[in-house]
Length: 80
Image: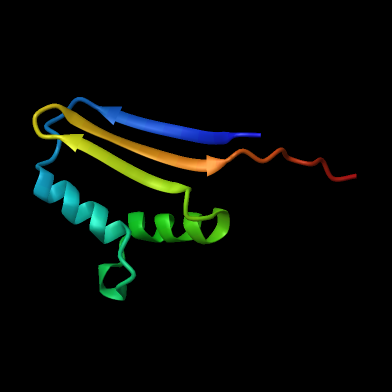
């Protein structure tokens, strides 16, 4: 077994550290008022697979952004 890791990388303008911190804290927040699509996905992945899985965002201003989605690998079982 192992993990499935999906990386989306761009070489765009990136984000300032403040913007990155705002987004990261928003997707990891337990507060209902910070509901967003990314937070919803993050919450569901962590609930289903565990705290070590989910979305990680890295960015450097004027260099680009990387979004990583990590979930465990599970073999599919064919229905008999």
